[in-house]
Length: 130
Image (cartoon, rainbow, N blue to C red; front, top):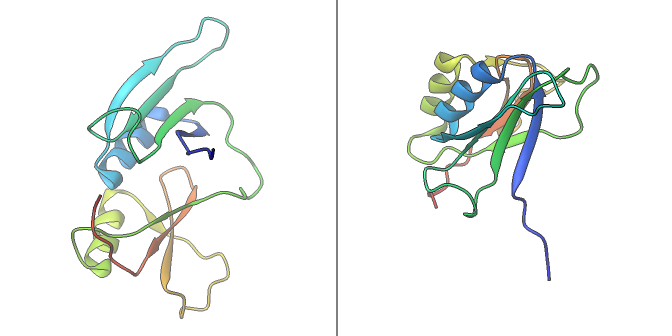
């Protein structure tokens, strides 16, 4: 038996801002909020419109201190309903920004950062949606 990724958890300064951003990027919706009694802050869970348990993991954005050092994990995205250049423009309009992590310009992806500076890549290969 194998495991399947169910959730990605991201500590952030402002879950509201990142939830709006990633919902627009991924066509996700807010699935729930949690306000734990034993911690200051809260978490917002976003995911596919079908809800929990589908083929895509949900994302939990929780208040906390983002890592100061470079993260070893980032998200790679493929455009599904438009060409990569149009998707790049859409992501930039949503608040992403170009990021330079040492790429030479010939890579088959664009490196971007979300509103809190978390890097992710937009791959230049379009795939069919699920």
